Length: 595
Image (cartoon, rainbow, N blue to C red; front, side, top):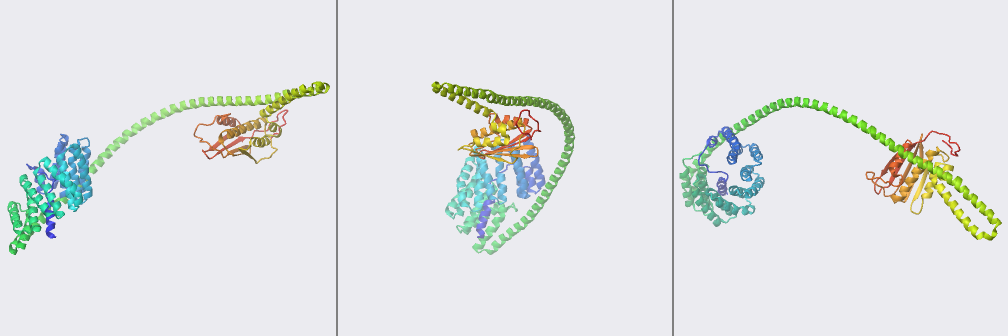
């Protein structure tokens, strides 16, 4: 079990993200010597320079270098991600072919955080962009990233679909280092599913392309895996020994090389299996020496990383303080400017509102004048109609009806003296009687006799009774003295208003029940009219039959009253009327009893 652990350690020590550099620059020097702050400063300057030149490839290269220092060496993953995402924002309008180059680094950071699902999510998003922009290199790298993540968590099922795209992409871009890496992952996959013969074929191919790449780290990874394969799968200790001796000879000049240290450990296992315990112990001591040196170097590197992070935090804090002071000064200047603008605007607004108020008052005055004229016109029209009703009623009742009665009496006298023409006289009498009845009914329609003789209360009760039928019933509720009388005009106006509202109920409401409630509150008369009909929306157009609600409201307003309508569709209607009772005035020749 211990040896198998080294298999995967060696496999994944090789990263597809690294790019072989022909010429080292200052960044590499600072990084190798753990001078991380200088490496970051160098990357900042270079990134700013290339961004200004719109050389986005080199800009992304230096941003990626900076991100790796922060994430791998300083362990400040949060700041590392922030730098990458800020760069993506800056490159918002840059072609996807360039922007997608940042996605491998984002995915790698999440892999370092062991957040493999997030790493794969980012990588797959980058794969879509790379495919769309036809960036074959990034497509291959991201396929490798996803594949490596799944192999790390030993998820062979999800790893399998990415095997062929990773190898195919490496071949397409003709990069021997990446082809070797792709074969290496095939070796890891088939080792994971216990297909050692197939795994060995891919390992041999990885070794061939590693040699072609001439990259020392790639060659070391392939040879280390080959040695582990002989050690753990074929159990051929001699071949494993030869591989590790060759690997040690090629890397002895680099005492801090991790591949050399692992070779020391694995070859000590080989000699242990061969029974050469002295040589095994010798190589094990070399491995221990390496570990001690590495721990010291790693400790120094971590100290430098902590110091660099502290310096970054300090610089960021100072920057924020300076930015805060600058913002405060700018805010103060802006406040003064805004205050002056506000005062100027306020003066302008005052003038505007003064002018608008003047126009509005003039407009309202004209509107009120027009309204009063219209209201007076409506009132005058209705008053004229009511006066005409009274006049016509009087003419019909006092003149025409009397003349018809007189004519009927004369015919009766004539009939008594001339019995021989009785048939013709009866027909004439019938016509006169019919005319007399129609004149009487018309007179009653114009001015109901109940209203004239008995007053408003009795007239309302009679109105409810007359309008009730098999389809609708009107209920009258009275809470004032039955013999109470009001001014003639007041009673007549209220009667015809209520009659018009009853007419609207019968025509439009489809109600089966309706009620009229009459009450008196101090010097005000209240009238409630309620029905259980279909109702209507008070926000929509108002009915215009008869007087129309608007004219009724105008008429009630002329009586110093108000009308409120409460109605909803399918919920019936309630109309509440409140009017001021006029002061008593004697009416000559009137039979009305005044309040």
